[in-house]
Image (cartoon, rainbow, N blue to C red; front, side, top):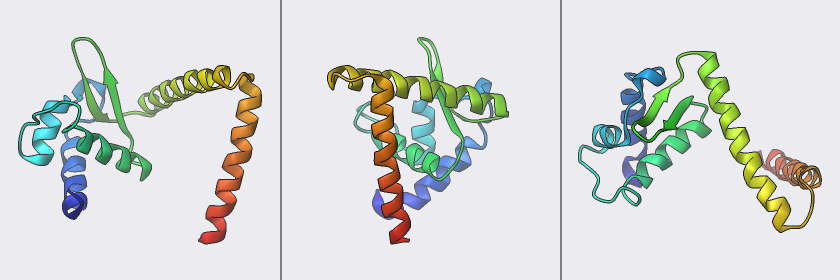
Length: 132
């Protein structure tokens, strides 16, 4: 896949431009088929390739949203700023829930953990800035 990574990202983005707004979300099966030209065999292992491409595009700033429900779900591009805000708020809630678990495991409170993470991020950012 690495040789064709950019081509797959282009296909993924092209397909997602047909799915703007949550009401037009595309299911994973359909999106996988559009990008790779075949059906996946193993839902977890095979679709990881697609999820990695989505993550990479998100890191590049592409507003790829997703949602999951018992009877539906899929990926889509944000149609309005409200969709983007709602999605980002959901990601922040998920992150805070996970950090709350980390704080309990480390036997510290969440604000203290967040302070430690801020210092770690500052160090990472300083190192990144010095390299570039």
